[in-house]
Image (cartoon, rainbow over all chains, first blue to last red; front, top):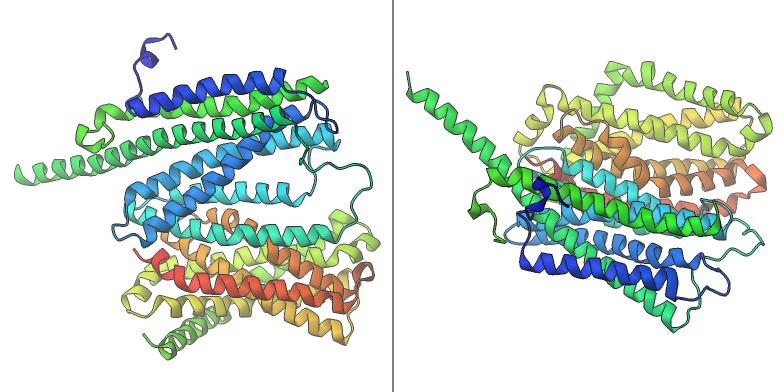
Length: 250
Length: 44
Length: 230
């Protein structure tokens, strides 16, 4: 970060987010050391278990992000103030969630290539994750529909509520759909492994690190969205002022 | 690709998108900041 | 706002929609040929009688989903034109009634299309149905249409308020109706006897369709008003 424009701290920074960012950065380095070098290989999976130390935490964070989006949306809909900040938090969380879910799908299929021999398998968990990804891409598209901020907030909150209803139904139907088909007889590990102390610690530590990254990103994104909303409002006010000035002159 | 490559690629693909996203929102924040009054920034 | 008023509004909206479609003939002259050509194109793409017979249920429901996108877009294009939806809002009628009316009209249209597609499958893909299978098939069609329509009316309403954003509908609707596709296809496999499936095996899937329809009909009744409210 040596060039002049980026050396200025971002205007969304506070002491809290800076410390959070430093913890996340340091945690990531420690996680990489633990996950790539210090932990032993798994009995069944061999070294491919090392993918799990990033795959499982990102998956966890992605699901956490969508639960958080749903909670903020519910808070917006049923709260007395219909808080726009809750709406922006929901949007920020969904955006970060989509990125983490994309990462989860990519690392999951790389792990699958090593363990199953294929990049994709119609595993219920994997399929639901893919559906969740597309559903929240749609949610983000709804956020971009335009209109006033209150309209955007209400619309996207309702779509988020629908997404919450959809996901368990999709998961359940994929689950019973798959249960009808004969499973291949070759060893198909599903990602659950028996772990020794350090491996388990690394996994839990990874979850903590990625949750910190999530909180850090959402805080910053939420503030950027507030800036965006403020600029939009200011733009309207400025245009109104110009129009009023025109009206007075003749 | 060798076995180890998959692992390295997985780790890179986990952190790079997150870093890019963080960089993008920081840039957006810097671009927007001059147009916003201090009163619209409750976190400051 | 009483129940009877909601039902009266729903009936009025549904009959209005169906009358528009009946008079404009867009459905019979444009959407129906579209559905038929999709079925023919599947046959070209797969090019094997045995495979066609086996995957016929899936093809029927894929064609139904594609057609439903056109039907729903049309149903709400009617409301967007001349800001008809604003007039509907100004009339001060309960939004639940408007929603249920839209859903009812969509269900009727979808069931008609499914019937045509099923007949086409019988002819083009040479599948067989007995009496028990036909009962299962009709129940499946009605409940699957209800599920699709209940969700599609909500997302269709969203595409009206976000004018000119029709591309949003497939993105929101198709992932959400995946359970309907799974349930309806499996039930139809039993009805057609594809892959040696028996008719009784189809009924649990009908249960899935019923649950799906009930959940989203309830959710849509609550959500449609606030969603289209400006």
